[in-house]
Length: 392
Ligand SMILES: C[S@@+](CC[C@H](N)C(=O)[O-])C[C@H]1O[C@@H](n2cnc3c(N)ncnc32)[C@H](O)[C@@H]1O
Image 1: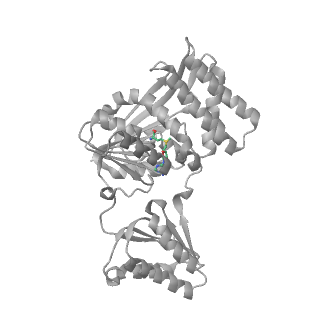
Image 2 (image 1 turned 60 degrees about the horizontal axis):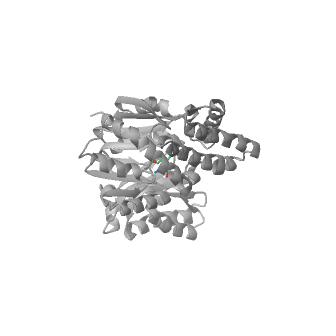
Image 3 (image 1 turned 135 degrees about the vertical axis):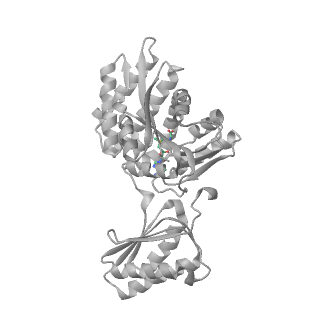
């Protein structure tokens, strides 16, 4: 959404420690003279650098040809005079044009390479972002909403606010929040093109036109600072290998006095009766499986620490248990089936688990379903909801 991106003039910065020259914002000069100081700054950085100089354009929302040619000239000239230096241009798929334009430069000059930093930026990215997670997210939100609709007003949700749902997945939460609480504005951002396409279809089917679905990277957002009264980020800190980076961004886009609301799990505490032991074994293994891909699905009770370390005050933490008694027990069973399919399927296979392990692993999910559907059974999935206020 163009209204949601950086509108301030561009920023140029050189960090000599990391030998990284960064450009961010919108650079559209009428003539090269307007950016002469920045081009000189780049040339000086190149002179100073040894080995590799990184040119970071991850947050460069727009640049016209005049600017592109001026910067490109500086690189090409340096390649001609310095055989000892290499340039790595770091682009993001979120601003796709940068990759296309700079890739061309890389084709001309072997000393220049282009990296799309978010093409593989955390180890579990492939299965979280392709279509395998869609059925999981659908069934989960249906069950958690029953609890969260009561919890959210204690964490800053109210009519008329400007809110952002970061890592929105397939967008169900944004749709439910819009219906129930009537915020004045909702931006819903995710890095999965498959999930966003799904979200847009759902919105179209429901005749919803005012949710701003946005493709973006939550750890490097193009959203402006201090815009939202409430920033929600559900079940997602736990799948990032660096949750603190994500929290920093949530903090940045939140208004002073506004709140950031996060939900996370502690998978090893999923439980059920009967067959408690087999269930417990499997969910301990779920936590280990995610840890293998550098995701911490045990993060829930650590929310208070993360929010404190990120600079929030007035931190509120509560937990709730989604159970088979919340509604139709089959809904609970459907969540577990979706977990079994992805965790004991794609993920365990990718880790290289042997068939005997996978069979035992699957059995725990089946026992959890057995407990959920048993007339005297009980099955639970605990979740931590927490929020902090950005100080005034
Ligand atoms: C476990 S899902 C949770 C989705 C949704 N909040 C929910 O509760 O249904 C995690 C989501 O984070 C998204 N995601 C992962 N890394 C991201 C990033 N760097 N920027 C934006 N979204 C990201 C994934 O595409 C996925 O939709």
